[in-house]
Image: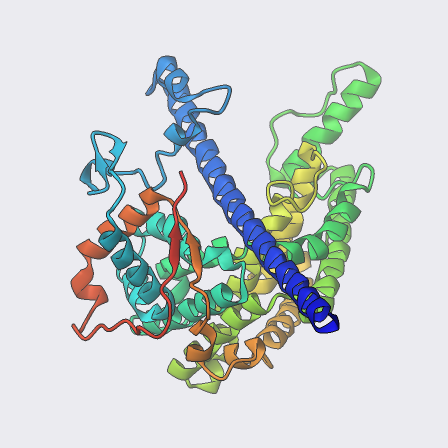
Length: 473
């Protein structure tokens, strides 16, 4: 009897473990679908903004917008003209605007093996992304298919494989560039993918922890004004004076920067604004340094790989500063800075911002950007800030240097001996992907199969299970 009871207890424990695994899988599916829904909504908003701008320019009728806009949100997907449906008439997945019928079991099996290959052999996607710099097709493919293929890096396995793709893609990009800054000028699509990756859960959570207290410390200061435009300061003072006296001022209404600065009050306000701005910039910089140990591994690993690839190609020690600047552009300009400019859009804060608060955050963003890139200001009235910008540049350089150094390898961070150990899972991985994305991936790969597959010796290991495709609409 005791043996039977022990067996029943073990059975209950095993059942509990299965229930937990099922619950986790369900939560993961919900997370991925919510991320996809958020991406779709952002595209819908951008598409609608474009249509409104065309309406303003009399290039689109109001009926055209009304046809697309459903107040109940049921026609939201029709607004996604910039998404994967762009050029649908040329894509094999669409026929008269309707989805093609479900694939038979054999086709499904082939797709599963195809996506397994794309997941576990990053060189294929890396070649494809590198080949199509700046093309709409590849931007759509990267934004709509690649992140779905890697499950928005929601699991250890998927994050490992996505970071492997970044590593391989940077190797590909190094083939073309002749100087470090050329990587930024060419604006490779892999950097667009980096921006999207930086908005996933862990990376976004870090931004909130880092920037929320900083932003709140700025917007909660009553009457804070960081305007550095002497003409704007002049007109604001003029309007305040006329409002308080109820009389029209005798001061001139048409002024340039030089004339505005002849006003002593304008000069005093500008000096005060510059002083406050530099103090706030120092506060932000101090927070950046304190956050290095908390920065997500994925961001630091990408920065480290980019730096290592650049340092391998440009071996002159004199190039180090330029290399660090390129990496700094990735870390600050593309990851941190946008969330400073529009923290509400990046869900860093929930507060509504006034026009003055937005201008203040823009001023902070600009001075930090000047410091991070070592760009001195040329406006004569702002030249006194240049010594502080130069000092800030040194601090940013040290910040970026610490970020890219002492970063563990993928294998050591995830605790695996090699890639094979990471991808060798006992159960088939699950990819949540829409039928439209499946066929769009098919179309893109079909167009560039000769490029992606430089040799014909493609073999899919039968020992590792290919992913199960869970399609959704």
